[in-house]
Amino acid sequence: MEILETIRNRRSVRSFDGRDLTPRDQARLLELFDQVPNPYGQAIRFQLLDGREHGLSSPVIVGTDFWLAGKLLRAPHAEEAFGYSFEALLLRAEAELGAGAVWIAGTLNRSAFETAMELKPEEVMPCVSPVGYPAARMSLRETVIRKGVKAGERLPFASLFFEGDFQNALNRERAKDLEPILEAVRLAPSAVNKQPWRAVVMGNAVHFFEQHSKGYVDKSGWDLQKVDLGIALCHFALAAEAFEKKALFSLDNPGIPCPDGVEYIASYSV
Ligand SMILES: Cc1cc2nc3c(=O)[nH]c(=O)nc-3n(C[C@H](O)[C@H](O)[C@H](O)COP(=O)(O)O)c2cc1C
Image (cartoon, rainbow, N blue to C red; front, top):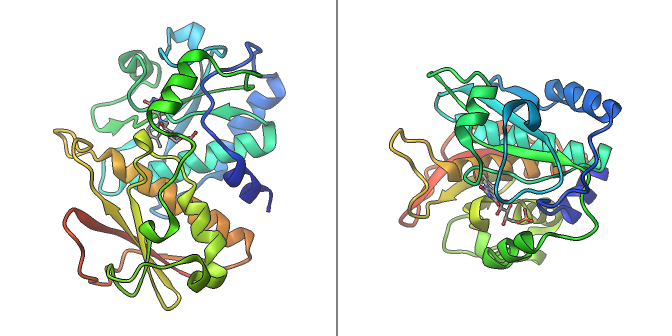
């Protein structure tokens, strides 16, 4: 249940208290790298980087020099695989070490990070996160960013979740024992807080879809919102596990008719 508490209480942290991560916490993070698999079976190489050594920075981060980053081969579903594993890592870091973090895809000196990660042409380093101990007060810049994306808000339950098809919104009462698990999905972080995940419940299956927003797919076909979908799948699986439900992953598209801009991603049966 500890991870569920973390999911409920987490928020992005962009202001840190200036302390270095203790050697013990650094060692624990390295151990966690091997404990965050993803259901796509894709291998991700994580690293803990000292920003002073590699000249790493982000205009939105103050008070820590430590960074987590990960890279993997460019392949179908690499976005979801990375989203899943990196979120599992950040949640464990918060739950076990009290460490703060924030997903960073855009506001970073990317080339310095990619050099530090020794990124090869066939690899991708989707996102990074600062890691450290949260400051008692947020920086002014962080307060402004949070306001800009309404970071404390989420779409209503019945706008995200459906029953049988996309015509029938699912309310909390009808979701029954899936309610707290879907709530963990609802609360997940996403790029610019767009929450592009949708899910259709059919019997004991929960089918996940992406509601595309404009501007998130780059020239190479990389889709940042699929990283968000990976994060949503991670929250679902961790919450299901907390309620001692076995969640079986599959990529069998149920063929549900989709509204415009909605794409099938993956399913869990519970
Ligand atoms: C894939 C992804 C990329 C993100 N990129 C950035 C970023 O470049 N800069 C930033 O300040 N926040 C970034 N965020 C953080 C989101 O703005 C934040 O998660 C969202 O507003 C919800 O707020 P919360 O995490 O406090 O719940 C990113 C989040 C995700 C999931």
